[in-house]
Each structure stands twice: as structure tokens, then as C-alpha cells.
Length: 467
Image 1 (cartoon, rainbow, N blue to C red):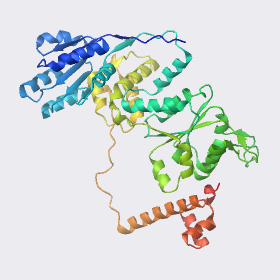
Image 2 (cartoon, rainbow, N blue to C red):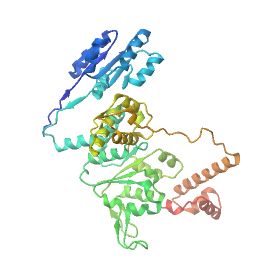
Image 3 (cartoon, helix red, strand yellow):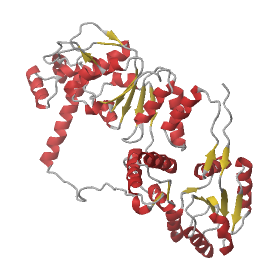
Image 4 (tube, helix red, strand yellow):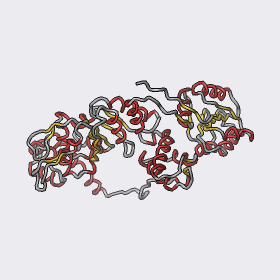
């Protein structure tokens, strides 16, 4: 099926501010027109330029000679009176301290050399208002690709790399490990992999491993047969059976208890598992996607997470970037969240003021995209006009409870270090011996009873390490 080409109608023009009217600005004007067809005009300042500037959808500011004092004042006056549209700066010389602060307060994005023509055009297209014609005669496959791509918002190189990896791995039936901080979009990436795979018509089953109590984990994952334990009055299928034919997404995989790790490893190797209380193995056709935070690596080092399971899960790894590493995507994400919550709450909120967006661009975002989602959610609810104002943006900062350092006694610090060492040592030893206490005690060169007392002291159950 033929897909019609997507054309872009650019609703606004670009203003290039260059007080010196240099050859560079003329070349950039020509480049913009030849690459995109967008009309651009050059202004050097003065009262007669503001009518042109106010009709612009984007302002490009050339800082080629901004170090000169009288020009610094021109730049400051211009930026402080700019209309609320995206302002992008091309900085080839270091500005003075006063102008640097003005740039921080008014600039949406700064491009520093070396930059290519294509890089400049990408940033212009990212920030300029545009209106695409609707596609016609589009195939179902293209619909899936468009909607799948829509799950991971952004055009930064970091997120584009994630999208490329997702699109490549989606069609192949292999396990995937998604790495990233909380709130970076690991579940969205997993849904995108499922959506673009041949399993898209079947179930996508998300599971938060950290939310399931240890004693219930095996039952949740593998199910049970009637009579398997005292209160098992009927048989119940587990999440693996429920996801048969589709995708099982295990979030916070580092929280999975040791015994469940052993059984999951067997399932990955044989595609078979045993529900609790059932002697026979059951087959299931399930694709597994796992997600992990930084804790996985520390647990792997100290033996709390099986190394052989890790290698089974990480056939293909995808790293999700922090929002602080892809600040260029914030305008697009903000637009997406505003549209979503304006629709939900039936509010006439259509955009965000430039000062509000600048406020967002200078935040650290420890909670990543989830934090940005919450901030815009609240801002839309609080908004009194058609655009979100700076006072409607509430950003929280995480501060340490106290600036003083907690200095413990030598004995306390020593006891704590010994306890941590013993626990790591025992867990690692039982992992290596698959829960065999006799062999573990022999390797540790300790009496078996003394070794058992150590296990009891640290509340470690050897049965959790047995295959």
C-alpha cells in the first residue's frame, strides 16, 4: 500500500537577530530557505524591527561579537523585549557575565560550534510551529509504527538511539533488559517493543517485582494447582500463563527473590515451568522484557542476583537516558502533557509561556519524565488562562535533611562493616553452592552448626538458592 508523502506547512517565519549584519547571518538565511523553504529575515535592532519580530514563530540570535560592551547592551535590550516565542542562540564567542545571565533567563536553546548545517536545521524544525497535512492511504503497519514511535516522545540524539534500538529488536523474539533511573520511561519502551512485534495482538502483562511480597512471588509468577497449600481451594494460573502468546514485562527485576530467580532461569532455558503443587511441567510461549535500576549491578556483584540469569535476561540491553541528559526534548514533552491533561479536564489550555518553559529547562529533574508529567499535570489544573504562567509551575527540590555529617563511633562503623561483609559473603557462597549448606560450610572452613548460626543471624534461607 502506498503512503502519501507528508508535507509540512510552516505557519510562521524566522527572525535572525544580528546587530552587525554579518555575512554569517546572510548565509544562515539562505541555508534555512534552501533546506526547509522557510522564509527568514535579518534584523539589526532599533524600534522599526519589532513589527517584523512580533510576526515571527522563532528567533535566531547570532552572538558572533557579543563580547563588545556596547553590543552586549543591544543583546540584553533585545532579549528582554522579545515576544514569547522560541529563542535559539548561536554562540561563537564567550559572552560577559551580565549577558551570560540574560542568555540563561531568555534563551530556549544555545548552539555552540562546531555545528553542521543539518544540526542547525534540526533545531529550527524542533522549535518552530508547524502544521502537518493528514496522511492518506496509510497502511496498518505504518499506523503501528507511528503510534509506537509516539510512545517515546522526543527528538534528541539520546532518545532517537533508544527508538532505533527498540525498532530493531522488536521484531526478533529475544529477551531485552531495559536499564534506567526511575521515571525514564522503561515501561513505555517495553510497550513499544511489544507494540511493534508480531505479538502485538496478544497481551502485554506488566509486573512490578518490587511490589510483590517475597512469599507470594512464585505463586504470582507460576500459579498453583488446587490443594497446593492450605488455602488453595482452586487452581489459579500465574502471570506467565496469562501472558501466553504475548509479552511479560518484569519491572524492578533486581527485587526478585532468589528462589524465583532459579525458576525463572529454568523457564527462559526450556520455556517450561511448574505451577505450585503440580508435578508436570507446563509450556508457555512468552517473550520476556525486564527492567532494572542501578541496584541490579550492586546485587550482581555481591551475589544477590544470579549471574547466569542476568546473562539470559540481557541478550539485548537498552539504556534509557535521564531527562537531564535530553533537555532538548522538554518542549515536545510539555506540549504532549498539556494536550493530554487539557483534554482530560476539558480546559482551554493550549500552550506554555516562554518564561515558564525556561524555568523547566533549568531544573535538574531528579524524577525524570515522571516528575515532568506531574508538574505539567498540576500546572494544567491550576492554569487560569490559555497558557501556563511561571507562577503556575511548581518545582520541588530534594534537600538533605541536615548539612552536618553523621560521624559514628569506630566500634559502630566497624560492626556495621563486618555485618555487611558477612551478609554479602554468605549470599555469594550459597549462590555458588546452589543452597547446599554442607558444601558452603566446607568452603568457608567453618563448622556446619556455626555456619547455620551465621545464616540465622542474617535471616538467610538456603532454600531460596536451590534449583
